[in-house]
Length: 503
Ligand code: NAD
Image (cartoon, rainbow, N blue to C red; front, side, top):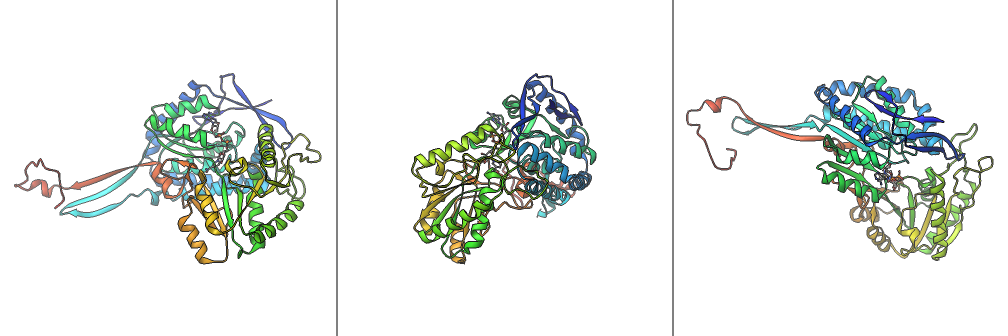
């Protein structure tokens, strides 16, 4: 059985912990490898190595750091197909979707290549007579990233390109469900010329995570995953004096107005609900259809499209499938339990994905696209994140009711509205309580030069990932106020014991 190990100090390092987790191919249900679960001591060792690499790396000029990232970007492009196959094999998503997530990660690398400009700080001449002020944006030290299974490439690349570009060193703890991609990225970083110890991968579980949250050398923790774990990460890291950004779960709603372009909206909703088998934090899982006519028209369209969807393995010889399997047998069972609960709690199950079988892949973790009508806010399938290909239609009488429902939900990651009316769209963007808003755009994931993050229980911590927030998160501001000798030479210069004010 293939074993997946750590990458520490520029090389693959075998773990001696004796603890492993199985890695499956979700399309076949076969175990394809086992990943080591590192011990606390092995995790401490990785932190120590990253800490040793920090002084030299942080003093390298930003331009030199950025040139390494430029090479890394070129290598990512060259190796895109191979990396996408690696993602598809362990995660299950279809090949083109894996290329899509790699591309979104690559865009953050492109953003981070601009670090000489982004890390300049600010400067004001003559804040007082003969006094200048400027700020330095200095790196923090060792930073840690803890990432989820659903984007094994993109989510780590939300973090480490900006962290290392700004002069930090990094320890990544990827998801134990699809751990290989992190090693693929580590190898390319080394090939690009990144000094050993600047980027390290520790495979593991809670034992490693707890070390990352408490070790004194770790200065900042970035986490992406489910909300209960995000809360734990944020509380623990903060209690240990670390900076923390912890992005959690989601339940993304859209409002479908009667004046929307129904064809365009339905196509967008299909992709956003069922792409990546609904295992995206920006997946659309609730449609608030305004008026029965709108709901009926949408459902007729969706039913027609669902009937034509091809579901199967992520990598095929011929035409690609629209949707692959979900991540594990346990997750499949959990999604099916939600579907059963929706039925029991009174929603109308229009398309049932529970007993879905793919010919030749009978042991794969497939759930068919599932569609509910007449869902109400009291139901578990409305309240909770299912993280599967299950779409709920909630019928609402008007825009205001829809907006109120979104704002009352505990999550506030992404949201969207489909309408042709500018005034409604404007009111929506002004008043909706969510971090990322789409107007006739179903999955409004911000580009790398903007920042990604939700509101409410979808994020803990004040700064989002990548964009300007990412640069702020991974740097510490130091503001220098300087006066040069002329004033010091003044004969009347005397000690002053009052609060300094600039004259
Ligand atoms: P998860 O919370 O189970 O795991 C995330 C990471 O935390 C993994 O590396 C895992 O090993 C670690 N972990 C798990 N249990 C832990 C514990 N008890 N103590 C310490 N560490 C622990 O999440 P997942 O199932 O891998 O990913 C799916 C979730 O991630 C969904 O809720 C999804 O919405 C969320 N997500 C959010 C975003 C976002 O940007 N907000 C993006 C992607 C995924």
